[in-house]
Image 1 (tube, rainbow, N blue to C red):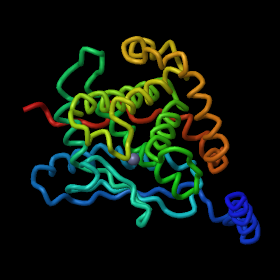
Image 2: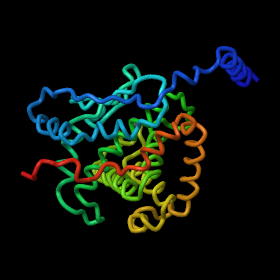
Image 3: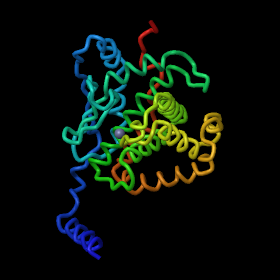
Image 4: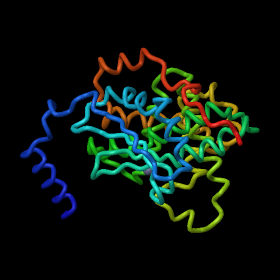
Length: 281
Ligand SMILES: [Zn+2]
């Protein structure tokens, strides 16, 4: 059994060298910076992002996680990277949160109430925080060395939505609706076979993942969207939520500082009114 032998050898080497000592993992290790964009067209978003202080609030929101190093969150112009959304760089230990993404949210999300009942300010804030949480999922997998079966991208979505559901109901609704709305909107643009070869699940699958976890956690609150979209998935959502809960408890929760978490849970976060989008042209 060479595979088992290799696994045992790895386990022994981990035991001999030992995991990094607990003292190195500390809370309050997230810092924020805004990099001025070169493109004139993104200047407004850059100013509005800085004024809103959404990234600073997000850094405080992540304060309870004990990290082995500083995690940086940069508001930045991303040019052609990451399809102009956001990405986590393991070399820099940094989340690049693209102004292009916020620009896209402003142009598509602020257009008014949708027929599915998505409200503009809520989807704007929720889609921003949902994307930050997805990148945080990548950062936690990297920095805490969380083992993942399946694709990192699916795990990052599950971590993001699970965290969103652990605070007050308004926050759960804002992030779930924002993330859901964004992926549902994006799903409607997927036209080519190559779109299905991506490292991510398809946008429609991502939409359903966010919604299913929320519905599994709180069926009453999310039943309207669930009835429209979950169909055959709905009966499985409670189990899906429990599966993610179990994985989170075993891999990430040991790195959450209970007293800092208590402070974070006592506060309200990410009011949709916090970010003021440009008025429609
Ligand atoms: Zn990702």
